[in-house]
Image: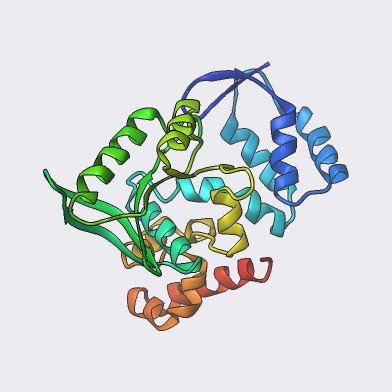
Amino acid sequence: MWVIKRSGEREEYDENKVKQALLRSGASEAEADEILEKLRGRVYNGITTHEIYQHVRRMLDRKRKIRYSLKDAIFSLGPEGHFFESLVARLFQETGYAVRVRECIRGRCIPHEIDILAERGSERYLVECKFHNSAGTRCGIQTALYTYARFLDISEVMPFASPWLVTNTKFSGDVITYARCIGMRLLGWRFPEDGGLESLLESHKLYPITILAIKKDVRNSLLTNGIITIKEIFTKKDRIYDILPELKANEVLYAARAVAECL
């Protein structure tokens, strides 16, 4: 049986992939098996991965639904990469870095716009964020080569400890090999294994507002005004009422509280 991925590619349906996603969402082995049993009657040849996602999501309880929805919520930050960069910047801040986003810095040869400049103590890092709109797209070697070239040019003028490359999908094998060789730090979906992007976002409870059941125009207004995470809805409550009419602001706070109670 074949499934159609977001990228349009076909691949053979792998029930174990769905099970592993359920287990990562917090479902027990028995709960995962029960959902898979129900899913078998709904899967057909040519089904899309998005349809499978929707079926599974409807079967999960609220807490597990939130964790299961994280990947899709990050994709919903697109199609441009700016909001993803802001989410990654929030994550660096949570882990003790001072950050500057989309900073223009002149290198030895040319000027560069850096996605994130992160500093902690005496060390400074150049962070390149690569946002993909499709889960099937891997972060490729060209991006890693480009990131390191920028790092070398800027380091001639402003010293950096090392470059980071962060993506919302997975890395190709070449990127991982190259990064290990030159000392580039990688952060992506389930990479590294002991602390991938999704794991760090969950542990710091940095869920993007795109996980909320709110209207797209409301969501876009918040994102455009720098409200990226659910946490910020509470820490910048007055700002929410400046951005939105009172009724819509109340709806956002209600939706955020419903999610926060499950985290």
